[in-house]
Image 1 (cartoon, rainbow, N blue to C red):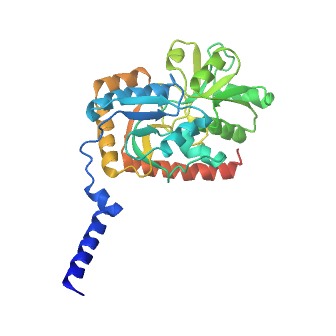
Image 2: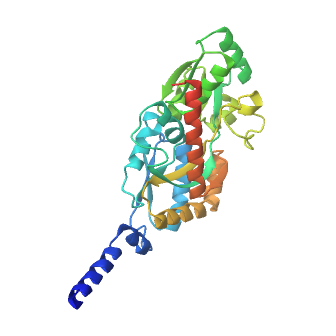
Image 3: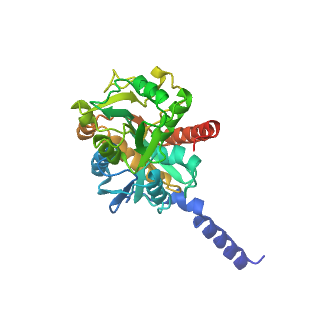
Length: 324
């Protein structure tokens, strides 16, 4: 091989390495990220408790990112509409979103959705857990959840309940009904504010899922059961699932953030750091306390594993129970 030909070959080889995708990811500079506002897609309805929580932490994270975080609500489809918008976004860190429990863990096992829960998302972090449960009106004849079950046993399908459409709240109630041998009439809604309005209007007997803490503490609604893995510090007197023997119904309700697959490690790290620092801000702590949301932290790789574990578990439960 001639000297000139060798030089051309070597230069071509070096250039191919520099422009290879893996090499690019090694040298890519994220120091200027973000250089413009970030869109936060929230799959929940506006004014839902989860919506308020996302806005609280996003406002504090802005301080550490140096750019505004614009929260955009995209509810509907059991949160699949918002989750699909995150999954199909450009993985440049300028579109992130709500890591929906129902949309990621349960819904894909009930119907076809335009994303894969563990392959199309990159989890960023978790900052809290939900207080989810069963609520009735304060003047309801049902004083305990057992009262509600006993009435349903004697009156099949007469009790109506509402929850977010095709959500884990719905799945939990249907699991309980199957275990108890009772039947409820299910009415799906787009979000918790609609469920609350239907309950207050007397259109349903009980609501399952997120609830309005101010109405609960003002004595207008009554909390009968919490969908929690442990007793709540906010409502220590309220029984949780395992207290009533419903260990088969897991309750992995977390507040978290995710982005589309392909989100570079450097950007994930910047986002994770900013939102983790936001959790230490007094305004975040006070805001979460005001809306009664417990603060629980998981970092990016831990949340990825958590989502994968419960995605597989709910698939197994759906197959075993036959609930659709």
